[in-house]
Length: 354
Image (cartoon, rainbow, N blue to C red; front, side, top):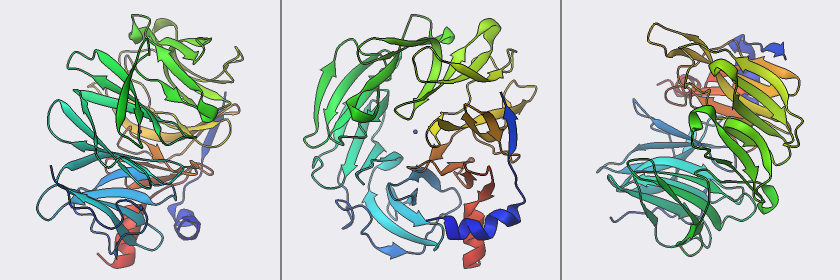
């Protein structure tokens, strides 16, 4: 979908990859139950738009303030410069996730201690899933949209895990689960189990309890291969690629040092079979914080980095992970195939003359 736009603007960006081997009452529009069939408008991004990611078709999901408060969710086609309203709500939409089936899961802010999860699409529950929590996390089954693991954290970060049925809105407590169970294809589950000291990572296990790796801080999987960030000796962090059968191949080491202690690169996103997109800290300042982040793709061949820095460690990718969004407002579009980075918001403003 973005091919036509990128064919024009990527060569002009002058970027080339650098390769190193080694996430009350509401007024619904007609699109609420059929994402993708709302009213087409010119996008009003405002001064500080909230860009949440992509829908199942690769359109960008963006939130703007409603006329009387709350928020409005749009899908934006950056190639055509048009937007489509999906839903208007009196609550504030803070997160959105698209399912391969085309359904959307929204997180809405309803005040301290209460999280609303709203599903949009055919056969979804008519009411919000309301979870009493200080914060929440979830994982959606890619093969069955009805299954969602939801983790509710209290103010002390103690947690409870529930299995939600998205078609009925029911919540069932899951006993003995780690804080972040993640669905894989074919209904499998993998998770990091807290070993009592998550500063040194936890144990990555599958649904049968088989240990896949120790001291894991973060992981991603395409169903066959895993990318993990693993706590190494002396406070350093190793990136590794493997199938989970003990065949881990190191591809990058983030060296130890005060500036990196407790600092992880952004979430590892899929970028095709055995390839994972991420953001790496470029340098640090005197305050021991990363001064910039470099989009990169990790694979068994090594790490391919873009020479362009972004100003936020948050990345979200399209369903096929051919493109990822980053930057403080999600304004930077990263092509995972060739490492180029462009500002899609500026491109829209240039096309519209605004």
